[in-house]
Image (cartoon, rainbow, N blue to C red; front, side, top):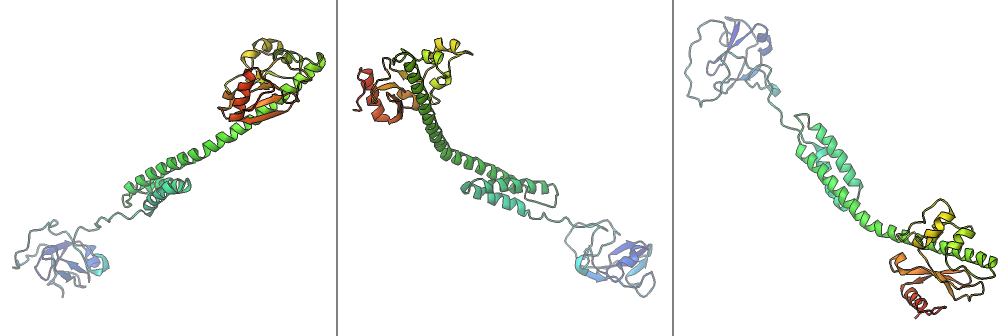
Length: 319
């Protein structure tokens, strides 16, 4: 074993033969006096560098030095290790100071995009969630920080998605509802046209007289029970697999009001059937006229016509 000695305070350190070449010519810092000194390039006790190297077991003369502030010291004789950049720092051999956590840019980007997603729908929120998950996985490495930012980015991104979907739903649902109602009105118009054609064919087979109710049409004409149901209402088609089974229950599963007494000679303005106002939430109703045409009437006009028909006036007035 060889020893190196601080040229300032005389503190000695033991080195193995393998460590001597490693520290030869290095500038290191003494753990005792905190002063740097250079280890001579020559090795061995008693040589030219004997003032610094000493054989193990030789008596080292104590050197007086000013009282130092008490600090942590490694065990006596622990060799120093060379520091970064040539200046040596004294400590345990091979030990490296703990490095600080690196910045996690993905976590920051996730949080920023999550905030943007509150104002810009869908895409920023999705990207924020993806980046947040990736950043969160990176924080498994203890050298990478930003775990809290990643979690915040994922949370804000998810919230922005919920807000975006809610806003879009509030905008789109009314439009979809209006489009569906428009389609239902067209479907009702088609249903009543088919009923008008069935009435005409029935009248041609019965000396121009229309049936007293709708069930005879189901039994004698090429028409199904679905035709008597408005898609905007809560009505369902009459139960049964055949027209004979459905006809007795048709009056309970019909969305339209039939006005008996009509003939093939009825005036074009006379109403043969109409919808109750409840079919389309009171916005209006379809009317089947004597010449077979069907017309949609707006709320006020439809209400006035139905009131006139209920009073026994047909053709009805619109006031």
